[in-house]
Image 1: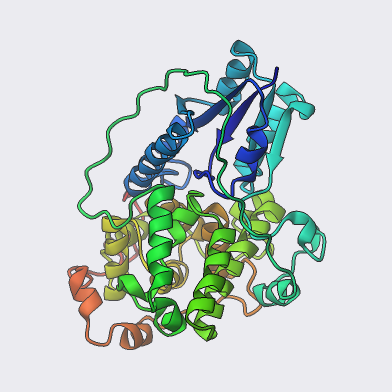
Image 2: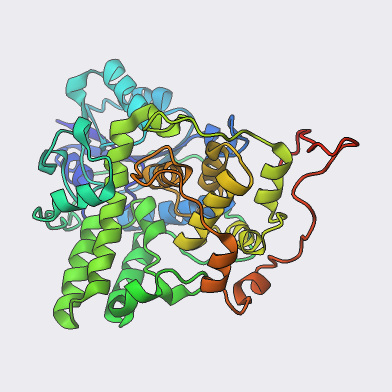
Length: 438
């Protein structure tokens, strides 16, 4: 009689979850597992944690929702705290579990974990099922090693290829072993919580969005700095796998059948393709996704000035629009795509900082952090990634005139509170570079 272990990670949903469907073939019992790793909450070499308060809150809500939805099928979500390389072999050995199932990983650390488990458990017992992307690897027109150097080329190559339809949620699951979960601390109390985690909330948001007229004007409104309806806001649920990109692709088509298809609805597909491109880039680039010279092996003239980094993190730079954007990010865990581009451009150009510190801070603060999208976009703006135009810089004054002409965004988020110089100076007028943590 077969017993299986389903290891949830960035796929916290029942619907369109191929790994869960494969795991549900167990005839005797199924253990549904999520592992919280303590290392996520410890500052790394770039002075930031992997998960900050906003993302942690969203994640806990997503786990609670997943447990509730599993409970409706007679299952439960088992929570463990520790190292997957220790916990999973122990569970499989102690409870006679035959096979491990999970969604195929794209991040370098996640891949290394899975490959190590394959070595420990045996390759025939481990099953990584693709389910986080629009397309399967076999659908790509070229080998992954030949991934196009620009998104525009990738988009053209994929134009004639249709994603598969999303899979329905299972109606039945094998019996649970009723193991005891480990205790998680209560949800953090945050001043502003824009998003509620979980598949239920994600499906509700998608239904509300596509029932509205907002998709019809998305292309015109998507660059707004601070307006809930201006963009889709799907990214948190996509990042944690509460929604799948194939579900959203199908929802776009349904919306177009009910209302109309235009440049705006097409552009939502383009955004999903951007996400798709960065997922495959992460898998292809592996450790180069985190290298100073990026995927292109280019060395840019940046360094690390601790005081500048601290002021950028605290919204205390000489640039009001940058201060406002980082203040919004710190308060809510979210800021618009336009604001993210400005923050990254300022970081590598005006502040001349090593882009990896900025990417790591985003990873900590963003409620919708996705390893491929975040680190790929930072490389793109830093001029070391998939950008044929090279090292681009935004004119912050011009961007302010275009996107915040009346200063409403800056005023709302306190962007003009810190007119102080960028650097402290010593007696010789040299910048003081003593360490100053954010």
